[in-house]
Amino acid sequence: MTSLGTTFDASRRFANKRLHLGVCGSVACYKALDLLRAWRRLDIHVSATLTDAAQRFVTPMLFESLGAVPVYRGMFAPGEDVFAHLEPGQCAQAMVVAPASADALARLAHGAASDMLSAQALAFGGPLVVAPAMNPRMWAHPAVQANAALLRERGARLVTPDCGEAACGDTGYGRLAEPSEIFLAALRALSPQDMAGRRVLVTLGPTREPWDGFRFWSNPSSGLMGAAIAVCAFLRGAEVTAVCGPCGAELLPRDVTRHSVCRAKEMFEAARDVWPQMDMGVFAAAVADFSPQYIGAEKFKKNGSPDGFSIDFHLNPDILQTLARTRNPGQKVLGFAAETAPDMQALLPLARAKLKSKKTDLMAANRVNDRSGGFCAPTNSMVVVDAHGREELWPLQNKADVAWDLCSWLLQL
Ligand code: PMT
Image 1: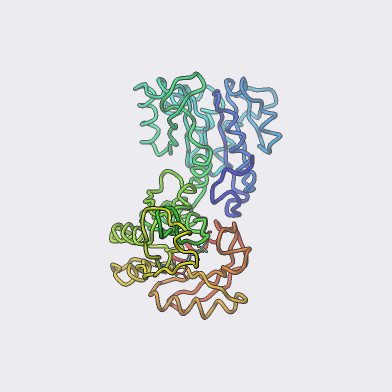
Image 2: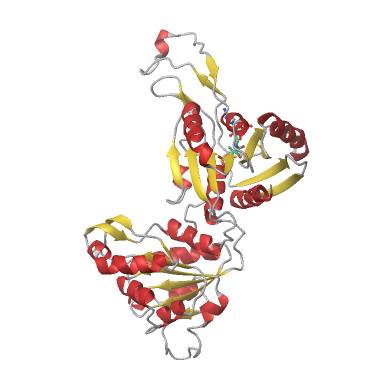
């Protein structure tokens, strides 16, 4: 498995960064290999340290085979440089300990330097991400909680355990968090925090407008483009609120606040309620402009209408237009335009027109008739225009990298 199912699994933004991975003794050790592969897939240089206990579960050679360089085995291991405990602090931009045992938490919290991993952590001045994994009773113990709190207080980012059945059969909080959460926490540690302090609203995914109890009018949006923006803003330090249609919420890390909705009217109400507290709004959702008339909770039967049937449609609220018009001073707005156009040049006037009609600061237009971009594709090519007259045509790139460039542009406005 090389992909963890996040929107950043193929981003080029982190290539050549250096991450140091600490692995402690736990049944969850094997998940560190999935993390290593996922970071290597982004061309991140990953080095690793396996504690003695970790080496009872997994071997250094396994980590080396999957691209970790170097892999540290122990403080005075044969052939180890005498200053090896300082090297990650000199060369890596972030350090991740996953899985972190109760013993490792204690050593990290109290500044022990009795083994290679804790000595390296002590000599590491950059961002530290710690993902504990242990028996639920151990995790709940006040001593472990106090160590976790102390690490947090000192600026470490804890990716706390999930609830579920532990390997020993006990149930509760203790299982290693989902690898996708740890993967993104590490990318966050490697990202500039240039959106810190900003509150960002993102609408994403399709809406579904029911016409009977079981069928609806909708579109093929996967929510990927909007989720990539939400994740990107989160990585860069923003506080993100996402209003999600029926697809896309599953792509968001747990630190993104989400409101799940179905219909355009519900999306409008959820976005309107949070909008006054936001600094930026990104409207990537494919909102149905019209809703069919609802003809009842029963399944509509075809034998009552052998010649087909007609149905009325009514106009939905325009979320972007309404919120852009009623914004507070300083709130920045990025809209999307889903257009059918023969080529990218033909998108330009359409993007300009939508920027004007929706009164946004920035408008990103994509050709939904081009299957390499638009709906569902992992990539997108865009025409982006802003209210100051700056206009750019962006070639096909990963949606995560499109999201990154859009966030950078928003910050400059
Ligand atoms: O989700 P993916 O599969 O990744 O696909 C991405 C995408 C194609 C959905 C995305 O890139 C995109 O183009 N989103 C906007 C889709 C859309 O509804 O475009 P539009 O041109 O119809 O609307 C213009 C803008 O008004 C959009 O920002 C839209 O969110 C907003 N709008 C539209 C209608 C409405 N009732 N309320 C709105 O807020």
